[in-house]
Length: 288
Image (spheres, rainbow, N blue to C red):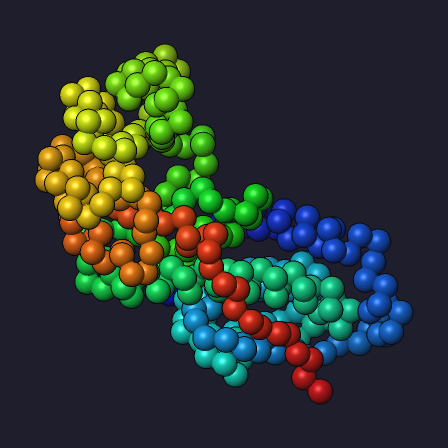
């Protein structure tokens, strides 16, 4: 499957930092036990069931530790995997192979877990996914957001904002600290105008009173209906109509996502995609 990848510069900087964290002045175990010119093949062995993610990242890792490394990809990112599958076979310098092993496994296990979680939500949505988009959130691991959001894309989900800098999202704390939802919206629009910025605006509402306040002032892109019970969510969707984009948030899980989608919302945001997944078990085994 074709999924937008992070920039190569971003990937290489991440790999460089991750290797520095783990290796520092050397992998002394490998340096002391393995000849410097030794080469080996190894297989990425899947020991779980789910969706594979991180193969493209692994290729970059091996290329960095050994420019002569070759990776034979047997299963692509986004594909279904089962226990016993071999995702790829890598051939490279043995010391470099062992230097990269833990970074590759740590990243791929987590990315595959996120992709699998996302895919499960997409399966629950079924044909409804043609009309509603499943969104991730900022509930990500610090400094790993770009990898986790990449995994969401691999699993079939859609990225929301990348950070605080690329989308205005007026949530409950902003509303309460500002003194009301109307005031927050007006100030946000004034800020954008004063700074000559063009950003989307989402405003969170907690009840129908706040919803009507938003409808009165307008000037937003999307209304986030937070923790609305299904009957109230349905009513809110009908009230908004086609005036603004409609997003459901809070209380979303594999058992509720389909019913939430049936209310007619345009987006469903799910923090669980990146904070409640289970990593998939994998290992990198030298081929004797």
